[in-house]
Structures are given as structure tokens and as C-alpha cells.
Length: 182
Image 1 (cartoon, helix red, strand yellow):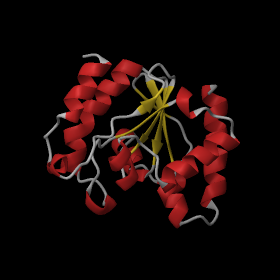
Image 2 (cartoon, rainbow, N blue to C red):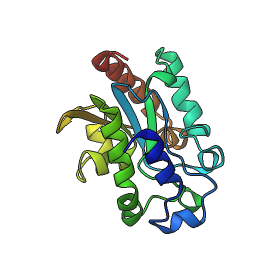
Image 3 (spheres, rainbow, N blue to C red):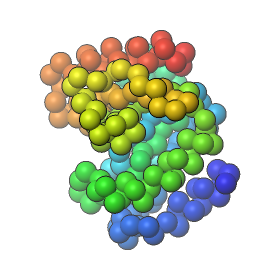
């Protein structure tokens, strides 16, 4: 499957009930040949309206980190596990994650990154392992097949709980930039 076929299949997806409430599927954006992917859990309201991941308040905070570290957003690939917004931005249900995982797997196959950065606990627990603890394991690389995967705080978490965690996120992203060469 190529990018156009995958994106079209995703746009027509009805594998779970979220297809009934979405405005747009939120497929992904950025460099499709990047060595690094950033993967969140699910789109929010702004993402659903625009069809682009991380464009709301959390996305603006992520952009601020990227700018501070001179990381070009267009040179990385950003997506979510879920391609449709859960109502009221609730956490994704396991069945919804399962319904979307093949889309993410295809994105990973097509990009073939060396590094995957999970934005938030939910993505990290799905892609790294269910025992992943953000407060303990953030910023650590885990070998998963041919990939190196790490988890960092989700920008929306930082907006709700800024005390101390914003500095940890900056430290993690500095390390990621150094390790990946982005």
C-alpha cells in the first residue's frame, strides 16, 4: 500500500464508532522520509476540525519546544494512534486503539524511521509496553524490533501540570535531538 491508498482507506474508515462523530480523520503530517516519528494518542477538537495533528494548545506548546531547540516540524513526522477524535477528548478505548493500529503500522512501514517518540503515557504504554511509567521511564530509549522508542510527557499534560515537568520535557527533547541528529 502506498501513501495515497493508505490515506484514502483511513479517510473512509468505519472500523469503530468514532467514524460517526468525526469531522475529519487526522492522518499525520511532516516528512514522510524522516528518521523520527512523534506519535500521540488521539486528535483533539482543533485537530478534528483541521485534519492535522497537534495544532491546538498542546500542539502550540510542542511547536514552542521545537522552535527553542531548532527542530523543524516539517522534517519530522507527527501522527497519533487514533485517527479520529474521541468525544470530549476522553482517553481512547482499547478497541478504538486496536481499530487504528494497522494504520499506524502502515505509516511506520512506509516511513521506516529509526526513532519513534511517544507523546504521552497512552501512546508509550501501547508502543513500548503496558508497564511503562512516564514519571520513571520518560526519555529512556527502548529497542523495539528495528526501532528505538521512547516516551515523553504529552504537551496537554504539561499544560495541566506545568510544575517541574516542562523542564524535564525540555531535557528529554534535547537528548532526543542529540541522539537522533534531527
